[in-house]
Length: 297
Ligand code: DON
Image (cartoon, rainbow, N blue to C red; front, side, top):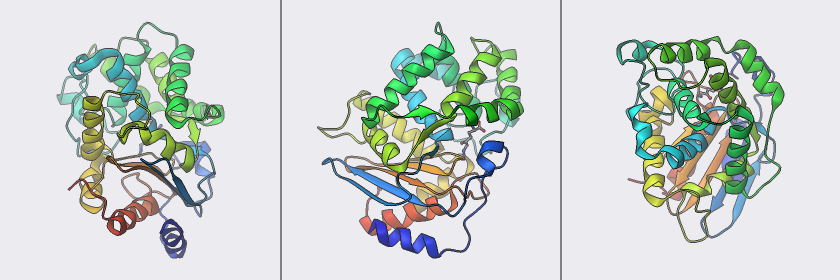
């Protein structure tokens, strides 16, 4: 079935457009497509460019949220909300009227607060090492690393994120210097992974006896609820409608989708739609969910 989906996607003319606001991502070949499924019984199935590494970007927000909840528990929700924003992932609008408290942990402002929370009392290097350790343990793969060129590229051009961070600092919602929180955030977004590695890493959210037990069951449910309601920014409702599974996208073109109790699914195609979500990735997961009949509804 995965190969069939791969072939179908190869025939689609409209592949979306690669993100250009991070210069290092602008040169990626948009003709690539990969997909991997890691099932609860330990199998991994792949198709297409499933072993090509890409920048996971905002998919990293799932891992940092898991770490921050582990560290701070429900106290985190004093600093970041749990509602869909209905706005673009990098919007500053709601921060103005909502006292510097971002709507949810998956828009950029919310993710910056989450990163600020895992930094607390630690150096960026130490925090990033802890994050990599978490991702490597989840994926059972010690080769996963941060792409320094992508991190630098975003550092040089990340004015919007720095503006979000400054604005939240003005409201007392950042505990560390803006440069430190942003620098750590840019590096987390620059984690490089393939579909195979990302599908493996997502297994900690699947549940099931042999899956990595990195977060408590009740926390897993909450992370999945947020992925369903906020994982695709202002297209989260559309993704839930079309796919019916919790997912998290990134501007590198990746989407991590969880079929609870069944599988972790990673899809990657660098061309994005107008909301900044992978164009073919969304279509492929829609076809996959329809054919498997996997849905939480
Ligand atoms: O902060 C940014 O803008 C990027 N590092 C990540 C944004 C992202 O992946 C949003 N995804 N659709």
